[in-house]
Image (cartoon, rainbow, N blue to C red; front, top):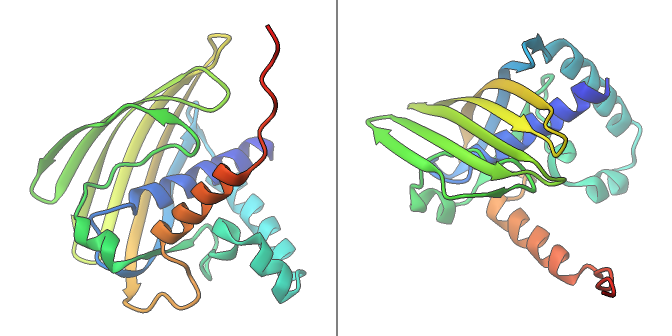
Amino acid sequence: MKKAAIALIALGALGAAQAAGGLKAGLWETRPIRMTMDGKDMLPQMRQADEQMRAMLAKMTPEQRRQVGGALANRGTEPLTQRLCISPEMAAREQPLVPRPAGADCEPPRIEREGNRTRFELACKPRGGGTMTGKGETTVAGDRVTTRLDTTRTDKAGARQTSATETQMKWLGADCGAVKPLDQLARQAAAAAASAPRAPAARK
């Protein structure tokens, strides 16, 4: 179950990252089509983890749900779906859709655009050490966007883990309702990180 929860969080990060630019303004919903880790299908376990999270949210008061915020608060009505809001400012940038692992330090991606397709390559240093490389492709077709990503991660001990993901996004409408735009959430997260207390530097 722990591995399924990790995959669920990773896929949620992927959906948020792919929505960082190149989409029309408004409310989008993302869902996983495929998710494997080391060749194992993770969707059944991810669906179980998602159902547990939804049950937890159902028991919360409205105030507790507001405090949770983020991905848990913005889940769609169907299993493994998540809703994202693209602001008009984000849509105007028309940047290519390139996933970025949450918390990772990544080099500028190598990007190749051809019509409605964008191919990309990633090289990142995940939180906790090690390296991660990946190749993927995003295809835009009207109000739907499909993103595929294959990655290889090597931890500090040299252990390797491969993953293959495919997600689809669909545009639900111009009104985001209670879902906050991603750029606003990013600014809030950056402000919170900047104001967080830091541990004192170790003495030499």
